[in-house]
Structure formats: structure tokens, C-alpha cells
Image (cartoon, rainbow, N blue to C red; front, side, top):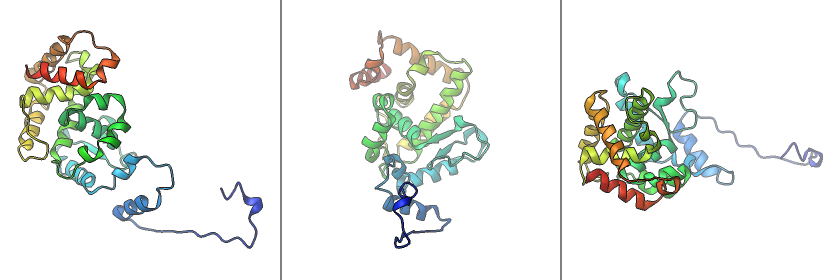
Length: 242
């Protein structure tokens, strides 16, 4: 704006500039949140400043004790852009919200439609401070493993089309018809059960995936519009626990 109006700027014009130097990311987050509301910044970028989201980031770091289970939660854009990390192991805030919302909150229809909608409409649900951090990691790890199995042609190809629904289905197949609440300590056992099964590249895991695909086939013709309805969510839930 200064450049475009340079002809109107004289020696009498004064311009205020604020320069804040810090290496503390928490301070940076506070500054972004308090001073940038006038700019066009997506809501999910402000979500990155929430304490609950920071807690999830710390949990991912803690769970990365071995290479097999190491995933990266990119709380800030391009946080790992300069590191030599396979992109399949990196989950940004939107992707993590979609995985978690689909698997643990029975919202694969919202995840299938618009990621921004899920992040904005369900931010108070997905990133509720009461939710256990384990659910975020379990959902991301399951998504990561299913991508690998699909890429290696070890599971039914139809599951790739039902990506978000497959996450929800996996939870019901492993945890039963009444899985634990996401705020309960009992959900930690559900998460470990899911991770234990999906981390093994064996007949049990592949068998469960292909069983899920067969159950999807029982639902008949599934068009794009049907995938995005709450009614279809109920149909998938019923066929998985039936």
C-alpha cells in the first residue's frame, strides 16, 4: 500500500512500525492471534495457538520413540518443510482434524466434504481440551498405515475411495459397538488396540481391512452425494457392528 501511494507520501508523513524479535514460539502465536484479525488468515491457523493443540504436538513428539511409529504433527505451516521427512508421515492441522473427526467422532461425512468446514465447525469438539491426546495419534497412525497397505496393493482398492469412512469402520470393528468416550481414560485402551492391529503387516490386519471392504459392498450403489450424508454414516455404522 505504501508503494502504490508513494506519490502521496511527503516528508510530513510519519509511519509507525512495530518490530518484535523473539525465538519463543508461544509469544509468536500470541502476537499472531492478537494483531492479525484484520488480515485474511484462515481460522485453522489460529487453532494452532490453542493449548490443546500444542498438547497434541507434544504427544506426537513423545510417541516418536522409534522409527516405525514416528509421525509428525505439523502444527504450524511448513514446520517440517526443511527436514528430510517423508510427506506420508506428516499431518497438518486440517488432515489431523479430518482423521480424528472421522475415526473418533463419527464425522466421516464432514471430513469427506470440506476440510475447512470440519475444522471451523467442529473445532470445539475435535480440539476440546478434555479429549485424550491418544485419539489424534491413533487416528493419524491408522490413516498412515492404511495408506501404506493400499500403496502396496495388500488391501482391497475400494477402501481408498472410502478413506474417511474406513477410519470410522476400523474403530467399530476393533473396539465394538460401544467404543469408549474420547474424554475417558478408557479410550486409551481402544487407541492402543487400534494401533496394535494396524501396525502389524499380517493376515489379521489385512483380513480386517478386506472384511470392511466387503461390508461396504453390502450397502449397494454408493455415489458421491451419498458419501456426504449423515444417513450414510448411520448405514456404515450399522453394517460394521451388525
